[in-house]
Image (tube, rainbow, N blue to C red; front, side, top):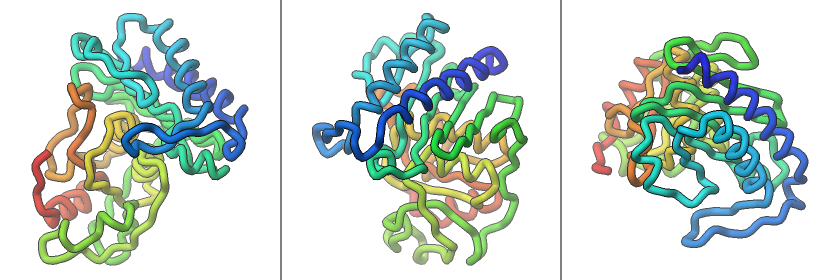
Length: 261
């Protein structure tokens, strides 16, 4: 299955990238979603449309979960589902930045089997297939194997290192940030950063593709309590995410105060 689906995802990501970059970020029409769910632009919807057309035509028996499509319980009855974020990092897109990404994954019975994360403005295409490794523009990726230390480079928003989340206070690390969760995970798979974490509930479409890139690059990824990630849930969220090399991941999870989902 990964071998068959991965070329489809890669081709779809590049097509979607051309659609997205046909819009000028700051000039693209935008509005705010209800309930403080963040901004959306006409580019998000255009990318969603082209991905839906391309992917569902190729795999009509797969379910569909996308940030920009109204959810349906129908996907829960399907063994295999696409999990899509048309533009992850919409604020970066609106600001004219280059660190937004198109995130596409296939999950089979809750496990991601194929994934692509594409940053059109940086021409970086991350891809992974279950059991066949992870790549960046065709080059094999390996996650960092470094243990946790004050010099560990960890991607996370500042609130994640508030003392209330940690046993004995937050660990000393070298914190960095990128707006797209899919890109943060891909950077961990690339080995440019030692780890990443986000402690609040996370949408599956932000995580699915990057999760496979991390694991296929030899890293470890779980929820904030160390539990394996399961996708295509009735309410499509995860109980936070912690990713990194095996040693650093374990050290972070051991220090976190457990929290129920």
